[in-house]
Length: 452
Image 1: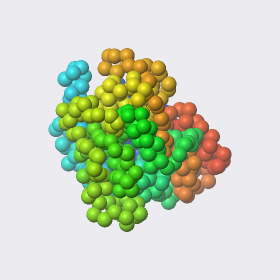
Image 2: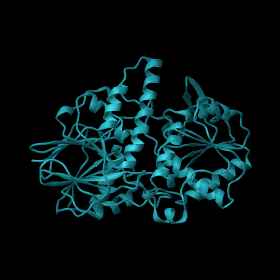
Image 3: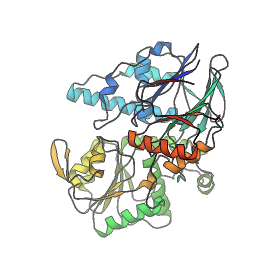
Image 4: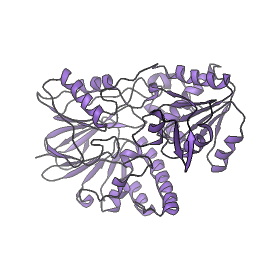
């Protein structure tokens, strides 16, 4: 008997965590943080629904916090086995988890909130990581094994084909939106008895221009013409680097208006070294056209601002200017300070390039709020707001189906829709049913279990 249980990213888009049980072993795929308006959700404080000491192996799909953020909690509570991931995911996870602990410690000192884990737990977690290449089957216990496939979402991201208890189970991880300026298109694992798939944009199609460079050029031109400020909330891992790569390309073509561009994200700045270290994961065209790769994310008007003092100095820089800062959902980080300063100005252009989870500041702005609360102050929303779905890191409805249809499944094969808001999950279920009428589809809730 093989059983899959859903302890995160079920009925919502964060907290990815799945337990796979056979007659002899227990495996975990992802152990992510639940994220909301204040980055830390009350769900994170709840005890894990299983005994980590009984888990034999952990597999990680990619380095975003909602997929790795509770790995140290798993270790703190007794997990001592390997944590498998691609080399790039391990390098990025090291940066992301250290940054998350630093932010949690600051919040604990400020608000008295208890820490989910401490530095000793983080250090032990990092020691338990083991690198795995794409397409190379890794034996687990007995005849069980798993293989990773490029998910095209962020650098090193993977879908997992887990063969456990005689059953084949695919975990999509997060599937990328293609074509990406940097990364290869997502791969579909070959076959499965059940597919556990994300559907962040299930039932939805990315609308508007799919030309990322065109979107950026429009925003830059408006900012230049209005002598304003272009604010770009960007996830520190992938979206920020993708933006810098596009700006570098525009700089090389002499298409950048003259204005300073600030990357105001210590995490994104630190991650640049990982991206430069793993050019083998880029699209072939990028590797072919860029020799050396050391300047892929650099250009004349770029300024990196790693320290708090550097960040504060941005306010003194003359207009026009561009500020790229995290967090991507505007739920924390330096972008919040810039929004407090510039959101009420009509010469500000806010370019939203990522998913905005319900309850976040970004979601409120996107929903048309006339004013928002930032650091205890009421701030009017007078900026020009533009949503650019071309930059989405997630496949849309059609792309999800294209990924799914390449997977060979038995008649009546099962599909579990996760990492999706309920309404989008329902839309995606209907869409899949219209294309695969024999599929056995479920939308699990947190705590649900199914036998494969």
